[in-house]
Length: 313
Ligand code: PYC
Image 1 (cartoon, rainbow, N blue to C red):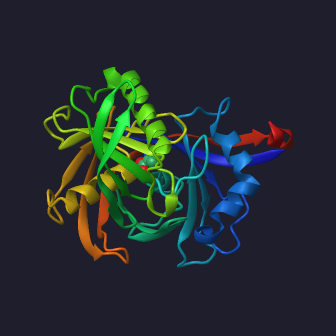
Image 2 (cartoon, rainbow, N blue to C red; image 1 turned 90 degrees about the horizontal axis):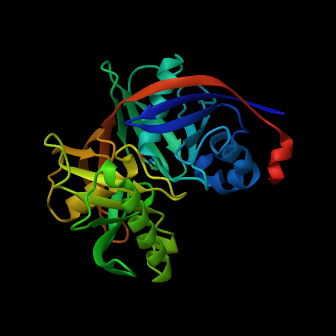
């Protein structure tokens, strides 16, 4: 029987379950070993977040605290279908949870993820700051014909995960319309696959972000609906999706470095975001260094019991 200590939180409505130093440490580091780790321990991670212990909206985080003082801790985020590159709401939830447990000293601290290091800081007001990995727009004005819906024009951008970002006329981006948004976004993702449209290195675009300026509350700049890889949608404004959005705004010259962008999610919660410009990368893409600010609420703490027999189920 595996016994996995965990702590749960939600960030703007989106839950995170952190597994606390419960699984073997990746020998070379999570940047190198994420795939191997998932092959060996993915079943256990999924058992920790899937039904009956969780649900498809739960994002998991395997946390390894620093091996030595001064080192960065490591994290692998995942959902009901597999590992994520980075996770913005999850990082906010992780830091708030570690602060609650007395395991996160104040001041700026680094976090290692499979896609690079992020800088984090817990504020005295309970806000968590995340300086994400560099974000960039890979493809602009991609035409996507979606049977039954019509033609859409969107961008493909990286914010720690791959996103197709699109504004859609005549479809309200609001909680009351979530079922229709889910169907539309799922149809878009199927069509991206069918048309062979990918991120860099043929990586799958597994997140769809439908954005609306008109449907945002007065205090926000835009509202989004983000479909996640396993079919659930993000209840928060999605940190990596907000980062991808910043990259597109930066590339279009629609947001200046340092200016605040208030990204609202489908439940109404807001991340405050901005970026510092990072110049072009090796592929000539303009990169933005996104900063996100949000808060999380700790909701539960305990121990999961998972039987070895579940490995094959
Ligand atoms: O906040 O980056 C995020 C995220 C990714 C998937 C769910 N939330």
